[in-house]
Image (cartoon, rainbow, N blue to C red; front, side, top):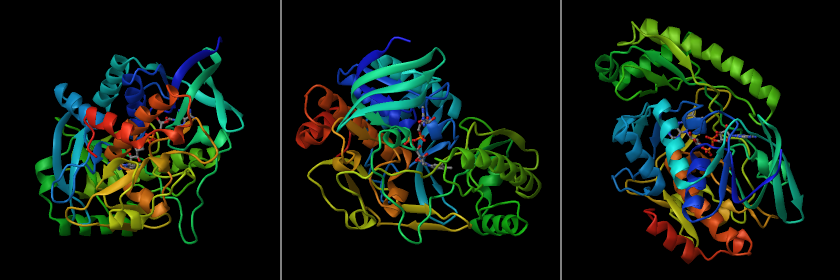
Length: 424
Ligand SMILES: Cc1cc2nc3c(=O)[nH]c(=O)nc-3n(C[C@H](O)[C@H](O)[C@H](O)COP(=O)(O)OP(=O)(O)OC[C@H]3O[C@@H](n4cnc5c(N)ncnc54)[C@H](O)[C@@H]3O)c2cc1C
């Protein structure tokens, strides 16, 4: 196929990739977004997570808006979400959330990208990247029409697993002693559920039932976490747990098989034992495993859990977050869930998105330069969207400047983000 050219190439159309591409295109950059699936959304749709959490502090102060909020408004307009609400987690914590219909989200993302003028290439998988010293030249995609070279001035890796950075030979952060990658989860959809009964269960009843599920080896995790499909009597359950390195293709394939096995066993346990679920049957597995963690880039700065705890301030803050440190541990049922304070906000600096050794590349989404613990807080989708809004905007600024991505003026970036409705 004949090569194509653009200013900004976003690699992977999850929530981060879609928002970054929209942000870049709205700044006037000729933007291409490619995605291996036939729809956008990544973990939000293919992984069927079903809820965006972490928009506000415990005290109810909003810290995230911008394009992420626009997506919620668009979802509401076409019946894909009831908007912002709250729920009580299995840990007993009260958490804000937006539940959404995974199918309607696909349409919202199609529309927002199309309206912004993003050229979206679905069914396109990254094959190779060309690099000359500190500069990336083109990405070669395996498309339905064959191999396609896309030349770009700036590349944003939003593939979650940072496949583009890996093929470009960029450096990654290593796990520290005692740390392991967070496990993956195969979400599954059950219905019909009588939510009056299901939601009416006390935390104690839920805890006792889920502990029994673990004891009977039907539930890998002592939780009955469910996001309701808005306007329906179906819910997506987040209870399976698969400890793999999802950047290893063989482990990923085994993980999909193990995920479906666990999901079926869990669905049967829930339908037999959990109030409100006696008429429910397994309606669907998520189209693919939900991956919490794989590669993290080695950036010009690395965000630590102490930065989050201390509310560290940065000259180049590009987004705020408030979601607690939430690390699911591989090889067991445990979760670390560390609340950071009633009205606690933390900042994310632009430099955690700038890879070491490359001048025209950026990262957005769950591959930012953060320690394993800090990653556990900033991986949620509202934060991913706030960062992607910033990184798409920064990519457009870089493409128009003939300067390295590291050289953009943080004040100009922040001004543009505020003008686009972001909270800083
Ligand atoms: C089970 C689970 C539960 C979660 N629960 C919540 C929750 O309740 N609320 C919340 O806000 N967050 C939650 N999260 C976290 C959140 O969903 C993710 O961290 C976030 O969606 C990551 O977004 P992303 O765009 O960075 O990556 P992804 O969503 O992984 O998107 C990456 C995209 O790139 C594409 N891609 C990857 N490699 C290639 C390639 N080589 N070629 C072409 N395309 C490629 C993928 O298909 C995908 O569309 C959860 C995550 C998981 C896994």
